Amino acid sequence: MQDNPKSHSANEEIPARVVGTPLQATTEKHHDTERIDHVLAEIDVGAEGHTHPFILSINTRSHKNFVAGFDARVRAGRLRQPGLSRPTIGIFEGELLDYRPIEEHATIFFEALSRGQMEQLVLSCFSRCNLVEAWGFLYGSPRRGLHQIHSRRASSAVREDLLGKDGGLRFYFAPPEEPLLLLIKFCGQP
Image (tube, rainbow, N blue to C red; front, side, top):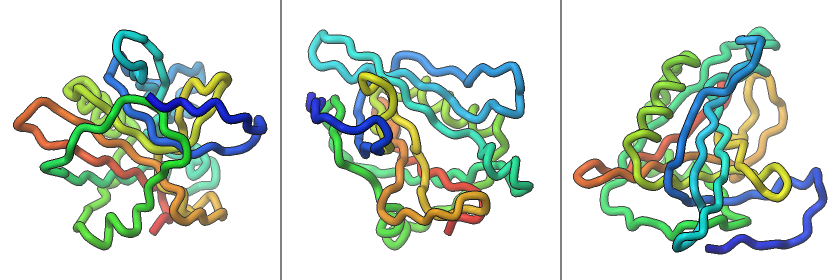
């Protein structure tokens, strides 16, 4: 496992790829149901008997788009990836996805899903998989989770267009089911 203890400022976004075994997943809880927009999936990123729980904060809708009057649904793109080797468990700083080359080499349909549909998709994949790989940005102290697990291109409600700084999820299942890469976009993202 690589968990780099570099010193970073509190507001600095630290990109990372994390790999771990699934522990549990649940929908976010909030007294205002309009604020619920994540599945919180806990994985173990510890190596060889050393448990290290880690939270993946996965968007199931866009509250920012909702507030701005745009479509709040996420668009989920799914890509089966046969023949992939299983990655090493751990936290690897500095690694992100770029959706552009993935989409150039594969036909991916991005389906608009309601919050409930997206929750069901993520929870179903999480319950069936035996390993999860995720890209995003570290948050918490000391580095307890990963968020921004989606495209970072400009959307209807967010003007900042970040190229090559995307997040995503890959689920590894027992054979014969092939690994599944899940890419997440919001309304207005290319």
